Length: 233
Ligand SMILES: [Zn+2]
Image (cartoon, rainbow, N blue to C red; front, side, top):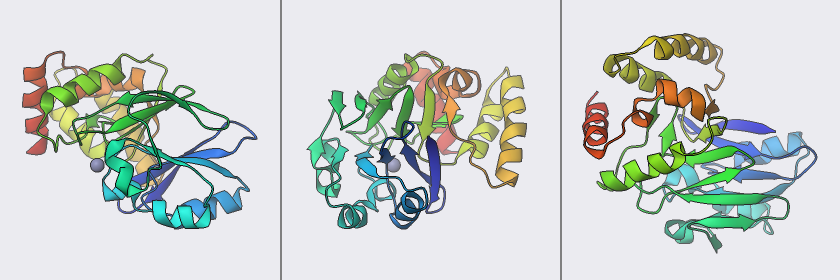
């Protein structure tokens, strides 16, 4: 099961689990809806994962730990004083039932990481549908490298970003891309989903390669120009 719990203005808290197994929660910006959902569905929580240190990704950790004191929290070095008890910056680690691959994804923050679990990529604020995270570090080369690393995963990878930014990203993509038909087709679907107050996510890497201009640039200079253009769009 894969569920996006809406949180704050436009965040999603992802809940992932294989059938009949405890679940993993990624980037809990809040706690109430997580506890409510796990109770309603009679699910137990196996682990909490943090992609980066921003409050809208870690804000619910303390309250979740108070409610589930034995559940381990994993995150990169930058989340150590945001509640991460086990520091994971790269490689593979295991929770009780899951193997989690950690992909370094710096750029939005210096030490951002993404988590790959059973073909599901939880990429925080690195890839969004139709876009990518802001480069708050100013290190565009690092962000470009991170996108290239994630882009090398199989096209079937299910992409689970932490924000509902799809429609505004697709408006920018439509504005900037010369071949617009894939973007325009997808935009119709996303408009429908959003009108029904459904998430536009998850997406897939294969789809993103068609609609996401940030996954189509192949050199750093073009990436920098594109990212700066989006900042001002
Ligand atoms: Zn962020």
